[in-house]
Length: 249
Image 1 (cartoon, rainbow, N blue to C red):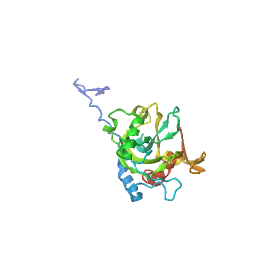
Image 2: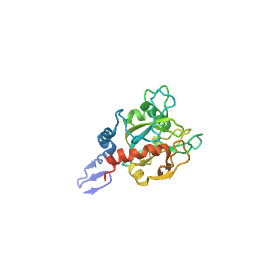
Image 3: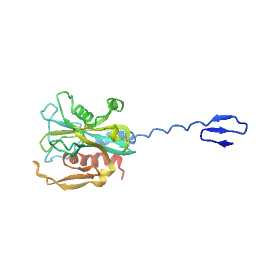
Image 4: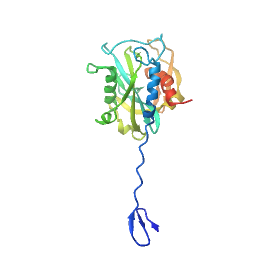
């Protein structure tokens, strides 16, 4: 019996097609399987308001405020899976912006009158900044884990981080196509694995600031340094919530 690429021909010259190989199973989303454990860890730490406490009080720049207060903001700490690794998504702000130009941040922005909650604000701003296809988040909705206690920006704006998960398998090659970014606001959308963020964590001297903080956390990446408010949000989440679930000792 002789084999060709597509056919098997036997000695009687009858011909039958070789069946195609079964399709490869879709890559299981490790993040989805870890989500119940993440919920349990979040609930273990949450305060009486249902928030994840970033810091133990007292802390020099914790703040309060509700959505109805003026000048509030929300950001989305988005967990995703990239090439099989549990990761976090960031944006590098446009170098043409007047404030915080070219800095790395979580997607998000100011709460407006159309937002029913901080979650709504974080999701709206994320969609506007990442600029995915119109139906992307309809087909791949973000699962909300909860929100953390607030932190103020250097200008004093109370910022509420919202934690969410995207159960969609990304790759380094398709991130730019999936999330091209709003060019007026964002120069780049990228991800860094949780494991890598823990490996590179360091500290740096801060510029003069209203909170009189001399040193703060910093996370060097190939896309630039993550520092300032984003790093202050990131560090406690990495060590208290994400390391125990995704990076077993």
